[in-house]
Image 1 (cartoon, one colour):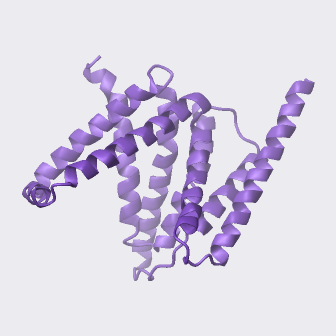
Image 2 (image 1 turned 45 degrees about the vertical axis):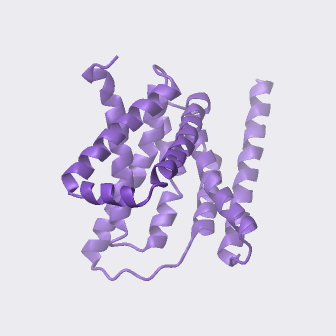
Image 3 (image 1 turned 60 degrees about the horizontal axis):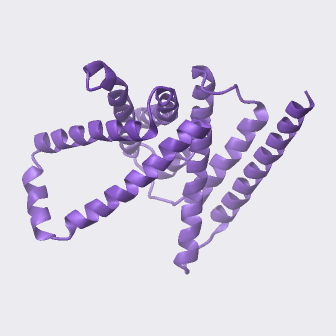
Amino acid sequence: AFSRRSWWPFVAISAMVFLSNSLSQYSTHYVEFSLKIVAKSSKLMPTMLISGLLGNSRYFQAVDYIAAILLCAGTALFSYSPKANVSTTSSQVALGMCALGLSCVFDGLVPNVQQRLLRDTTPSELMARSNAVGAVAGVISIAFSGDASSIVEYAGSRPDLWLLILGIGLSLAGSVLCYTDLVARAGSVFAVGIATLRKSASLLLSYLLFPGKSFDSFRQLGIICIALGLLLAECHARRRETKEKAT
Protein backbone atom coordinates (compact mmCIF):
# COMPACT_ATOMS: atom_id res chain seq x y z
CA ALA A 1 0.00 0.00 0.00
CA PHE A 2 2.96 2.29 0.64
CA SER A 3 4.97 1.38 -2.46
CA ARG A 4 6.58 4.22 -4.36
CA ARG A 5 4.51 3.47 -7.45
CA SER A 6 1.15 3.70 -5.66
CA TRP A 7 1.98 7.17 -4.32
CA TRP A 8 2.98 8.73 -7.65
CA PRO A 9 -0.57 9.75 -8.71
CA PHE A 10 -1.09 11.55 -5.40
CA VAL A 11 2.26 13.30 -5.73
CA ALA A 12 1.19 14.42 -9.22
CA ILE A 13 -2.12 15.84 -7.93
CA SER A 14 -0.38 17.72 -5.11
CA ALA A 15 2.17 19.09 -7.58
CA MET A 16 -0.59 20.29 -9.94
CA VAL A 17 -2.43 22.03 -7.09
CA PHE A 18 0.80 23.70 -6.01
CA LEU A 19 1.62 24.81 -9.56
CA SER A 20 -1.92 26.14 -10.09
CA ASN A 21 -1.80 28.30 -6.98
CA SER A 22 1.82 29.40 -7.45
CA LEU A 23 1.40 30.35 -11.10
CA SER A 24 -1.77 32.35 -10.44
CA GLN A 25 -0.03 34.27 -7.65
CA TYR A 26 3.05 34.81 -9.80
CA SER A 27 0.92 36.18 -12.65
CA THR A 28 -0.31 39.07 -10.49
CA HIS A 29 3.18 40.59 -10.67
CA TYR A 30 2.60 41.25 -14.37
CA VAL A 31 -1.18 41.33 -15.00
CA GLU A 32 -4.02 43.10 -13.23
CA PHE A 33 -5.63 41.35 -10.29
CA SER A 34 -9.04 41.63 -11.97
CA LEU A 35 -7.75 39.49 -14.86
CA LYS A 36 -6.71 36.81 -12.40
CA ILE A 37 -10.21 36.87 -10.87
CA VAL A 38 -11.80 36.38 -14.29
CA ALA A 39 -9.45 33.53 -15.19
CA LYS A 40 -9.77 31.67 -11.88
CA SER A 41 -13.55 32.04 -11.98
CA SER A 42 -13.57 30.35 -15.40
CA LYS A 43 -12.02 27.02 -14.39
CA LEU A 44 -15.27 25.29 -15.35
CA MET A 45 -14.39 25.76 -19.03
CA PRO A 46 -11.05 23.86 -19.09
CA THR A 47 -12.58 21.24 -16.79
CA MET A 48 -15.33 20.57 -19.36
CA LEU A 49 -12.84 20.41 -22.24
CA ILE A 50 -10.40 18.10 -20.44
CA SER A 51 -13.24 15.90 -19.14
CA GLY A 52 -14.27 15.04 -22.70
CA LEU A 53 -10.68 14.46 -23.82
CA LEU A 54 -9.95 12.09 -20.91
CA GLY A 55 -13.20 10.21 -21.35
CA ASN A 56 -14.58 11.22 -17.96
CA SER A 57 -17.81 12.40 -19.60
CA ARG A 58 -19.46 12.89 -22.96
CA TYR A 59 -18.45 15.82 -25.14
CA PHE A 60 -20.55 18.84 -24.28
CA GLN A 61 -22.78 20.75 -26.69
CA ALA A 62 -22.64 24.45 -27.48
CA VAL A 63 -25.56 25.17 -25.12
CA ASP A 64 -23.60 23.61 -22.24
CA TYR A 65 -20.65 25.90 -22.92
CA ILE A 66 -22.89 28.97 -23.17
CA ALA A 67 -24.40 28.13 -19.77
CA ALA A 68 -20.92 27.60 -18.34
CA ILE A 69 -19.71 30.92 -19.76
CA LEU A 70 -22.65 32.71 -18.12
CA LEU A 71 -21.91 31.06 -14.76
CA CYS A 72 -18.19 31.90 -14.99
CA ALA A 73 -18.87 35.48 -16.13
CA GLY A 74 -21.37 35.99 -13.32
CA THR A 75 -18.93 34.68 -10.73
CA ALA A 76 -16.14 36.88 -12.11
CA LEU A 77 -18.36 39.99 -12.07
CA PHE A 78 -19.55 39.22 -8.57
CA SER A 79 -15.95 38.74 -7.38
CA TYR A 80 -14.57 41.77 -9.21
CA SER A 81 -12.64 44.23 -7.09
CA PRO A 82 -10.70 47.08 -8.78
CA LYS A 83 -7.01 47.20 -7.98
CA ALA A 84 -4.22 49.54 -8.94
CA ASN A 85 -2.83 49.01 -12.42
CA VAL A 86 0.37 46.99 -12.72
CA SER A 87 3.19 48.85 -14.48
CA THR A 88 4.84 46.26 -16.76
CA THR A 89 6.32 45.82 -20.22
CA SER A 90 4.62 43.87 -23.01
CA SER A 91 6.97 40.90 -22.53
CA GLN A 92 6.18 40.79 -18.80
CA VAL A 93 2.44 40.90 -19.54
CA ALA A 94 2.90 37.98 -21.96
CA LEU A 95 4.77 36.07 -19.24
CA GLY A 96 1.99 36.78 -16.74
CA MET A 97 -0.67 35.66 -19.23
CA CYS A 98 1.22 32.41 -19.89
CA ALA A 99 1.49 31.74 -16.17
CA LEU A 100 -2.23 32.42 -15.71
CA GLY A 101 -3.11 30.20 -18.67
CA LEU A 102 -1.04 27.31 -17.30
CA SER A 103 -2.69 27.81 -13.91
CA CYS A 104 -6.13 27.41 -15.52
CA VAL A 105 -4.97 24.25 -17.33
CA PHE A 106 -3.91 22.73 -14.01
CA ASP A 107 -7.24 23.82 -12.50
CA GLY A 108 -8.97 21.78 -15.19
CA LEU A 109 -6.63 18.81 -14.87
CA VAL A 110 -6.83 18.31 -11.10
CA PRO A 111 -10.54 17.35 -10.77
CA ASN A 112 -10.37 15.18 -13.90
CA VAL A 113 -7.31 13.29 -12.67
CA GLN A 114 -9.06 12.91 -9.32
CA GLN A 115 -12.09 11.44 -11.07
CA ARG A 116 -9.90 8.89 -12.85
CA LEU A 117 -8.14 7.94 -9.61
CA LEU A 118 -11.45 7.53 -7.79
CA ARG A 119 -12.19 4.54 -10.01
CA ASP A 120 -9.61 2.60 -7.97
CA THR A 121 -9.60 4.39 -4.62
CA THR A 122 -11.95 6.05 -2.12
CA PRO A 123 -12.49 9.80 -1.59
CA SER A 124 -11.06 9.61 1.93
CA GLU A 125 -7.90 7.85 0.73
CA LEU A 126 -7.47 10.34 -2.11
CA MET A 127 -7.81 13.27 0.29
CA ALA A 128 -5.53 11.75 2.94
CA ARG A 129 -2.73 10.79 0.58
CA SER A 130 -2.79 14.04 -1.43
CA ASN A 131 -2.75 16.17 1.73
CA ALA A 132 -0.03 14.01 3.27
CA VAL A 133 2.19 14.71 0.26
CA GLY A 134 1.38 18.43 0.51
CA ALA A 135 2.13 18.47 4.25
CA VAL A 136 5.52 16.81 3.79
CA ALA A 137 6.40 19.23 0.98
CA GLY A 138 5.30 22.17 3.16
CA VAL A 139 7.44 21.11 6.10
CA ILE A 140 10.46 20.61 3.84
CA SER A 141 10.00 24.03 2.20
CA ILE A 142 9.76 25.72 5.61
CA ALA A 143 12.90 23.94 6.79
CA PHE A 144 14.88 25.07 3.73
CA SER A 145 13.47 28.61 3.73
CA GLY A 146 15.08 29.47 7.05
CA ASP A 147 11.79 30.67 8.55
CA ALA A 148 11.33 27.73 10.90
CA SER A 149 12.70 29.63 13.93
CA SER A 150 10.37 32.59 13.25
CA ILE A 151 7.38 30.25 13.06
CA VAL A 152 8.30 28.56 16.35
CA GLU A 153 8.79 31.97 17.98
CA TYR A 154 5.42 33.21 16.75
CA ALA A 155 3.69 30.02 17.89
CA GLY A 156 5.16 30.52 21.36
CA SER A 157 3.74 34.04 21.55
CA ARG A 158 0.24 32.88 20.51
CA PRO A 159 -0.98 30.03 22.77
CA ASP A 160 -4.29 29.89 20.87
CA LEU A 161 -2.54 29.36 17.52
CA TRP A 162 -2.71 25.57 17.62
CA LEU A 163 -6.43 25.61 18.39
CA LEU A 164 -7.00 27.96 15.46
CA ILE A 165 -4.93 25.73 13.17
CA LEU A 166 -6.86 22.68 14.37
CA GLY A 167 -10.18 24.39 13.70
CA ILE A 168 -9.14 25.50 10.23
CA GLY A 169 -7.70 22.07 9.48
CA LEU A 170 -10.89 20.25 10.48
CA SER A 171 -13.03 22.69 8.49
CA LEU A 172 -10.89 22.30 5.38
CA ALA A 173 -10.76 18.52 5.80
CA GLY A 174 -14.55 18.34 5.87
CA SER A 175 -14.82 20.65 2.87
CA VAL A 176 -12.26 18.77 0.78
CA LEU A 177 -13.76 15.39 1.69
CA CYS A 178 -17.22 16.53 0.58
CA TYR A 179 -15.78 17.95 -2.65
CA THR A 180 -13.84 14.76 -3.39
CA ASP A 181 -16.92 12.65 -2.70
CA LEU A 182 -18.88 14.88 -5.10
CA VAL A 183 -16.25 14.30 -7.80
CA ALA A 184 -16.60 10.54 -7.26
CA ARG A 185 -20.40 10.55 -7.36
CA ALA A 186 -21.23 13.23 -9.94
CA GLY A 187 -18.01 13.81 -11.89
CA SER A 188 -15.42 16.56 -12.18
CA VAL A 189 -17.53 18.99 -14.23
CA PHE A 190 -20.48 18.94 -11.83
CA ALA A 191 -18.17 19.36 -8.82
CA VAL A 192 -16.35 22.34 -10.35
CA GLY A 193 -19.70 23.86 -11.35
CA ILE A 194 -20.90 23.61 -7.76
CA ALA A 195 -17.61 25.10 -6.54
CA THR A 196 -18.08 28.03 -8.96
CA LEU A 197 -21.58 28.67 -7.61
CA ARG A 198 -20.34 28.28 -4.03
CA LYS A 199 -17.95 31.18 -4.49
CA SER A 200 -20.76 33.48 -5.58
CA ALA A 201 -23.04 32.20 -2.82
CA SER A 202 -20.34 32.90 -0.21
CA LEU A 203 -19.91 36.45 -1.49
CA LEU A 204 -23.68 37.01 -1.55
CA LEU A 205 -23.93 35.70 2.00
CA SER A 206 -21.27 38.19 3.11
CA TYR A 207 -23.50 41.03 1.88
CA LEU A 208 -26.38 39.66 3.94
CA LEU A 209 -24.32 39.09 7.11
CA PHE A 210 -22.32 42.31 6.88
CA PRO A 211 -24.70 45.04 5.64
CA GLY A 212 -23.33 48.33 4.39
CA LYS A 213 -21.12 46.89 1.64
CA SER A 214 -21.60 48.42 -1.80
CA PHE A 215 -23.82 46.22 -4.00
CA ASP A 216 -22.85 47.92 -7.25
CA SER A 217 -23.74 47.26 -10.88
CA PHE A 218 -21.01 44.62 -11.27
CA ARG A 219 -22.59 42.48 -8.54
CA GLN A 220 -26.09 43.00 -9.94
CA LEU A 221 -24.99 42.02 -13.45
CA GLY A 222 -23.15 39.03 -11.97
CA ILE A 223 -26.33 37.73 -10.31
CA ILE A 224 -28.23 38.12 -13.59
CA CYS A 225 -25.58 36.15 -15.51
CA ILE A 226 -25.57 33.36 -12.91
CA ALA A 227 -29.38 33.16 -12.97
CA LEU A 228 -29.42 33.01 -16.77
CA GLY A 229 -26.71 30.34 -16.79
CA LEU A 230 -28.61 28.18 -14.29
CA LEU A 231 -31.87 28.63 -16.19
CA LEU A 232 -30.26 27.70 -19.52
CA ALA A 233 -28.56 24.64 -18.03
CA GLU A 234 -31.79 23.46 -16.38
CA CYS A 235 -33.87 23.92 -19.55
CA HIS A 236 -31.27 22.09 -21.65
CA ALA A 237 -31.07 19.24 -19.12
CA ARG A 238 -34.86 18.84 -19.11
CA ARG A 239 -34.99 18.88 -22.92
CA ARG A 240 -32.23 16.25 -23.13
CA GLU A 241 -33.96 14.09 -20.53
CA THR A 242 -37.21 14.26 -22.49
CA LYS A 243 -35.44 13.18 -25.69
CA GLU A 244 -33.75 10.26 -23.93
CA LYS A 245 -37.06 9.04 -22.55
CA ALA A 246 -38.65 9.33 -25.98
CA THR A 247 -35.96 7.12 -27.51
